[in-house]
Length: 175
Image 1: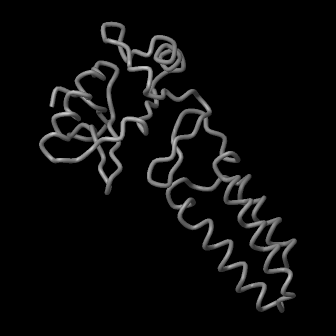
Image 2 (image 1 turned 60 degrees about the vertical axis):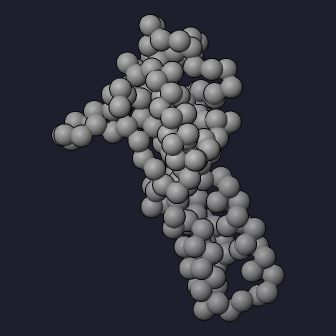
Image 3 (image 1 turned 135 degrees about the vertical axis):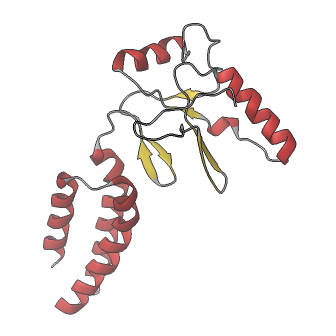
């Protein structure tokens, strides 16, 4: 491949792609050409019979704040390259992009990532509260609802102390 991808310190191999089911994540260096990526993807689709959903393509610039802003302004990974096509989204700092259940991007506030889960916890605990469960029942409900709704996101995203405190308050209120 003509793509350099990302060289991770301490790793011999460079990181270019991760594939899972129908999700593909491509890691480009500032020297990689988006045109070269598109050529590779078209060839891969032609040979494999797969279809690549360009509408779902998102570019998340990685690097210094000045570099990221430059990519947004010029739509180029490098000054010598053609611009990234206008139909491809380039994310701004603070905008989370969901990849396999994790939210990635630059400067993403944890509260924004966790808000949908916190709202689901509120709704489910409120619904269960209407049945007037016993103390043992409440303990089981908390394990089922809070544990079930937070387990995956915590494993892929981590949970900040701020989010832990918010969830602990919800549990205390329910008990």
